Amino acid sequence: MITEVDSRFCSDVVSYDFKFCCEDCVHYDATDFECSLGFSSSPHRARALQVGGTIVFCKAFELT
Ligand code: SF4
Image (cartoon, rainbow, N blue to C red; front, side, top):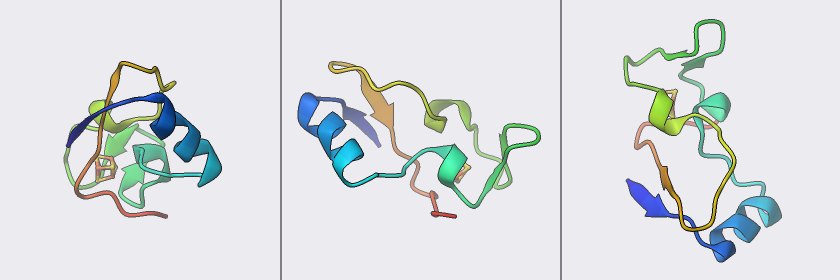
């Protein structure tokens, strides 16, 4: 799901320590930077949030 990043989202990520990127997902293999389910991890990997930008939530995300 593609979601636009706004200032409220940015503050909520910090306030609630919101995890949604591959690096915090049980299916992520940090040794080869790949998803064990075979999905492309690049749209879901951690990056700096930018107001006005977008993030792509993965429906298969499972917190480690
Ligand atoms: S399931 Fe989704 S969030 Fe988890 S590692 Fe794979 S691509 Fe990333």
